[in-house]
Image 1: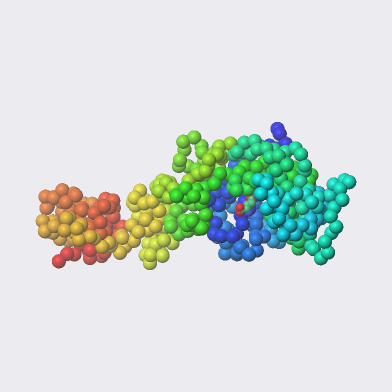
Image 2 (image 1 turned 180 degrees about the vertical axis):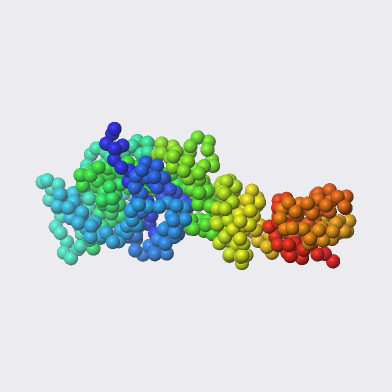
Length: 468
Ligand code: GLU
């Protein structure tokens, strides 16, 4: 067994709470969560809130609520970077004591001038090492009254290599990396340094994150090495594009994850859909959470950007709705009914209603809409009324109202009453069923007549069948 395989997996999701988390972001939680669960490991939530101006508690709440809704449970955390500043400063001091860090007094104006000069010479802008101490080198005189930044002494020569689980082997020459600022003039550590300290302290074995961070990785690896720590395995996930093919972002209309709960999506369907946005298991499109966890590994992560497709999400949700037990759906649809003001269902009747309509629905909102029609009746279009509720069928409708007024109120008795009216009036089932559906539900497209009538009260049916 390799050393890596013998270690317990520890993964993390490290969002910055600078906006409401959308589907593209939460996929970066799903994979590390799934990998931890699939390997019996630990999943950690870390909130990267050092951008104080742009971070908000409301955004943290959406992250936590979205993860709770999707069932992406974490074993440790949430840890907040702002609460770990003392720790970062202590590690910074260690690194400084070991000679990996040096103060740099270059002013912003000097840095700008350097950049312009390099651009004019068609060179890549980079810090030129003016303040980097070297044996035998004389540093410029320290300017008075200037608080220096601290820079990390990046190794010179050689390269940083890692075997990315998505992108394959990546090699970056150290000559491309300048000496990174790891502490600001006020002593606060910068982003890349905090990430390394956290990943080190949290003993992260696998960093699974968006590929917008791939440029940070060689710098982070060099800091790990300077600290004498093992470097985690990296997997950089390709971007999620929106339906227009742009990078998904709240600026171009991406919805907060929690909005999908409001729109009646099922957590397992979302997990299924998100899983397929960048990972595959053969041709399987519909799978349960358990199957996903059984199958998930880092070997089948996709290399190209995935594109969000709402129609497909609805289809996936419809498949999960259909596969969900009626009793479970009854629980899930309850809040949607309450929101519509439709109350007072007994659990068994609600479950039967769910069973009857679930095949016709893409979301819980659709399902609640159908169930509402049972209770309130529906407003039929005048076209449906004139097509189906004809003069010819009226006598039969009156007979049906009488028969339904007398029979027992269960599906078999209602079916028998309908049958009796058909025999007496010489009509075929659709000739009677269509007008009844239009009158009781407002639409000719419903499941079988006896099944829907049984779910209504006798009084409602009688009232809706009354025509003048
Ligand atoms: N905080 C970063 C982000 O929200 C993620 C950093 C990481 O995963 O290393 O994009």
